Amino acid sequence: MYNFEKIPAGNIALMVLGATLFIVVPVLIWILWTVKKKEKFTTILIGAATFFVFVMVEKIVQNMIIFPTAMGMPEHGASIFINERPLLWAFLLGLFPGLFEETGRLIAFKTLLKKRTNRETSISYGIGHGGFEVIFLIGIAYVNYITYALMINSGAFAATIEQVQAVAPDQVDALLAIPEQLAAFSFAGLFLAIFERIWAFLFHTGASIIVFYACKDKKKIWLYPLAIILHTAMDMAVGLTMAGVVELSDWQLEAIITVIGALVFFVPYFLLYRKDKGTEPEI
Picture (tube, rainbow, N blue to C red):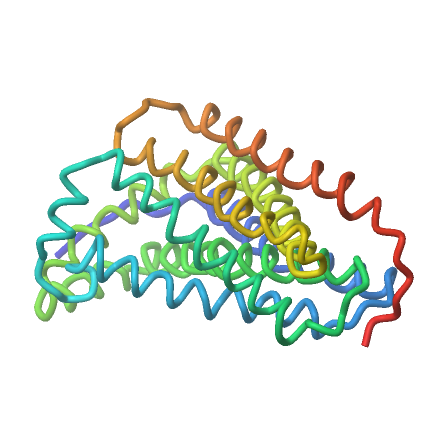
């Protein structure tokens, strides 16, 4: 029988705060933006749906090539080759999201949003894409943290591990790490997650502006591959740290993400979005 120390009430309160912020704030931003700019909410929904579809496809392709065991498949020549080369591994970890997410933006702007050429469309899509990422990847994760914490405190988590051990013993180690992670949950960790999400959200908004103008002006189609490169650089920085190619503290990594996020948002915002004086009505 497994015995785990109870998760402090203060930690659970922080998890509840995090879940609330990461789910409610993006929705509030969506509502305030559409009301203020009189934008169609469907543009935001298209951004969210496009993110979901293309990330799901990206994860399948990425796992098949780099992490086949995650899909219950045996290692193959390509995966072994990639996993033995940390620099290549980190590069591909950045390239897959960059290629799939930016292509998703391109397809959405070229098809579903083809007739919505007012500049606000770029931001509407961007906050839909970035906001849903916050909810889907972080908000739901915090809800899971709360669920696990309550299960640990009630004793249900220990019983669950015993059941899992009987049917899928290879998953037990991952579950056993959860109580320690939740016990170490802190305000500093929550603040770091909030800080990182702010700049990731701005990054996605800026990338959406870039791809929007790549679609709006044929002469600026070069902005599309630029968006892929910038997205790859953002995620590759994380991959390099994970692979141990470079040693960075959490705050050092966040500093890099902040710089890239700020550049990707503010430069397109002032050079493309603010200079677009078109007054075409949305359709």
